[in-house]
Image 1 (tube, helix red, strand yellow):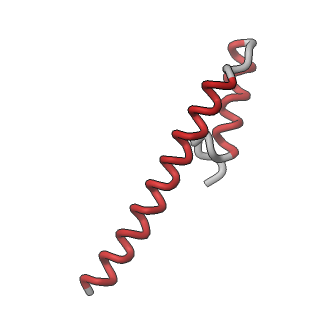
Image 2 (cartoon, one colour):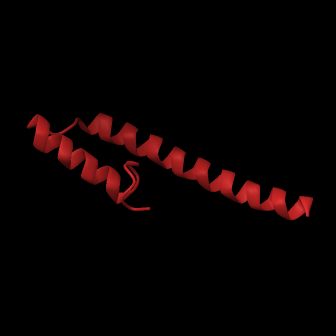
Image 3 (spheres, helix red, strand yellow):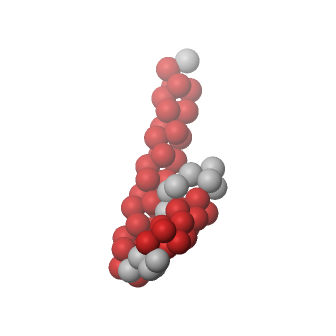
Length: 61
């Protein structure tokens, strides 16, 4: 899970480091903050979806 390029995970930070190596400059702090928020929303959405499917399967059986 940590190698996924989601900014809230370690893979996302590696993605930004690779970008910095290629572009020669670091992304702005505002961009990093927004990417972190989007990454957290994606993770929470995945968590809610997975748990919701577990509850749905439990209720339907």
